[in-house]
Image 1: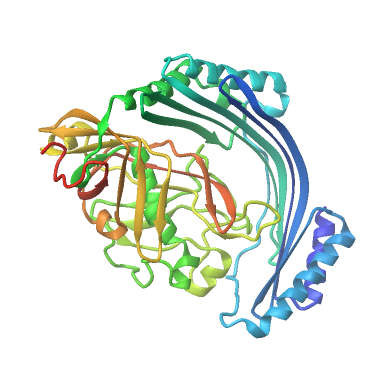
Image 2 (image 1 turned 45 degrees about the horizontal axis):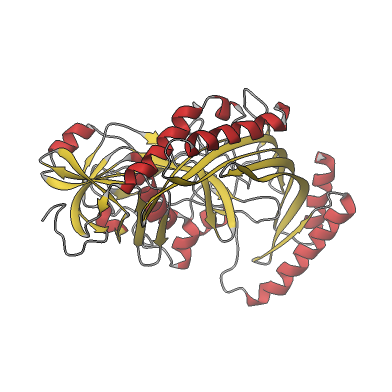
Length: 472
């Protein structure tokens, strides 16, 4: 294969490409979904493909194929070159790539139990058990959906800089959604785990704990009160901290958004963008997380990125192209969903570094406020710096004690204003948001987390308007 890809890349050079790369992949996967005691979906899929990318006269061309044979790959080169040449006269912002040292490596997937060696019946049975345990926790549970997926395969990255990397991958995920209803009140809870490891992810899960606790969260929300709306001092848990740092801040650090003017962080390098106690990191080398990787999809070694240190913006996340535009070294943040997609700037494992405060101390510092826990989605408008994060559970804080339980809560605000209102950073650190992040039609594995945070004057959305504290 290496000789073939080198011939393909040389063909691109001969046709005038200043830079070219090719990614070849093959793989297979299994998905299982069980809903309300019935197998909703059980399926397998497999495939192979390649994507050829070229830079010609400041314009990019990209051509994918499912046929990984020499004649077809050569055709892809010609198509990509033709696209780039056709686009070149219309490009107002010529493409470029940073200089890189060539890398040669071969990576083997790390796992204890290969999911391909586990009988499909056993994988399906594990999902049925999880769904049944959740469904039978309480008669008020009206809908349960349990899901499992695995994927395995290999990929090759090669480019005209001399990089040639072969890697194999294995990935598994487990998820559960539970909905409970009492009268007109309907509430849901979610739980998921995802990682670049083998079937041990499932074997290491305590089904009773995983399913029952998720179901109990949904049931507990039925008796929770309607949430107040207004501004509150809040203490947020590591899940919401991860949502905040990924959705509200991380996407603004992606250099393609900065370069296009769609990020609030454009022109702010070295400036204060958060409280002095806030350090934000994106680290693809953090071991055993969903966004962990050694090389990105451009073949660049992945490295730890300190985006914010002690409140000051230190840098952005880059592909080869954005690194060249900003005059910096690329750090391995060019990621693609597959060989049919061109790499774009993406996060990996994003988090706020822990400091000194315990949760108990943060609660004690809060006379009146809210403790916010759990959440699985968020939204950010990068160009305006606005964000919204879903919250699963909220509790009133009164003189340091947790009292009234609330439901249907979200927090929103301006990203930089909120980060500058962080008053306390916890000494704990956890990651519970392993999953897929979507951008420009592509999804890649990521993770996010952090410690508990205390933030003052946060806008909380609920159903009871006009409140200035949990109880008026």
